[in-house]
Image (tube, rainbow, N blue to C red):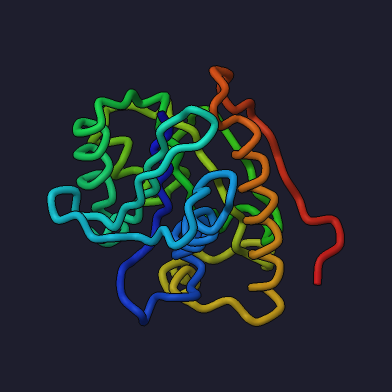
Amino acid sequence: MKIIVGLGNPGGEYNGTRHNVGFMFVDMLVKCKEIAPLEGLSFGFEKKFKADIVKTAAKGEKIVLVKPITFMNSSGESVVKILKYFKAGIEDLVVVFDDIDLPLGLLRVKNSGGSGGHKGVQSIIDTTGSEQFIHFRIGVSEHEKVAKDQTADFVLSKFSKREKENIDKIIEQGINYLVEFIGSKQSLPNHTLEIINKA
C-alpha cells in the first residue's frame, strides 16, 4: 500500500502558491493513467480524515492520495488518522512538500529525514512519532536564500507563469519516478531529479 500525501493549505486563495506544491503534485498524480487507470477519479472530502482523498489501485497495490484540509501546520492530524484507518505502516507513507532551501526545478527524494523547518512535515513527525517516511522535497526558490523573516510571505506567494511551467515539469518527473516503484516491494532509493532545460 502507498499513502501519498500532498501538503498545502485549503482554499482558493492558496491555489498556485509555493506552499501548495504538494497539492499540485497529487492533483497531477490523480490524472496519471498508471496510478489512476479509471477515468474521472477526483478528490472527495472525508470528514473522519479531515482530508480530501482518492482511493485507487495500480500494479496490484492499493493507493490512497491525500490532501489534508487541516491547514499546513496541523497536517499530522489528518495523516495519523489515515494511517490508522488503512492499517498502513510509516514505511508506506510518501509526503510531498515544498522546500525553500532547494532551487526551483529540483526534486529530492529521501527515505527519511527531519522537517528542515517545514511545519507541515514537523506536524507529521510529531503525530506519527517517526521520520521514517518517504520525503519528496520540491524546490520552490529561485533566490540564493530566503531571509527568515520573509519566509511566510514567500511560501504564500504565487508562482510566475515561467516558474509554474518549470514546477509542472519537475512534478511530471517526480510522478514518473514514483510510478516506477508502485507495486514493487523495493523502497524508493534516495534520488535527486532536476530539470536540465528550464523554460
